[in-house]
Image (cartoon, rainbow, N blue to C red; front, top):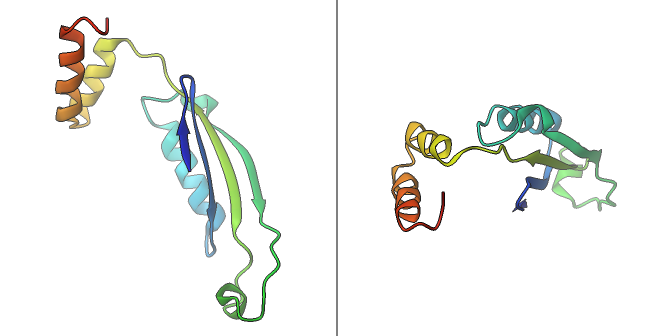
Length: 111
């Protein structure tokens, strides 16, 4: 799940093996590179192997895989000036979003 508040983005989820920890790490590194987030404050709040009871019929158990890894990441939003936001949207190819952003500004609803 992902929840965006006024100050931060919170992502909670689970990753299955193989390479559960590597995929979570890769996602954290990608978030740290986002110009919309404060990279050095992207934090892995929770990372643990889920302790779930499995039955002999559980497909993970039959394949010899461990239980999934649950995690939570917090990423504070960068404080960008409106023109910086607009430039980023254009650079990223978000033309529709950039047009809506300009419209909202032209209506005086945003600085």
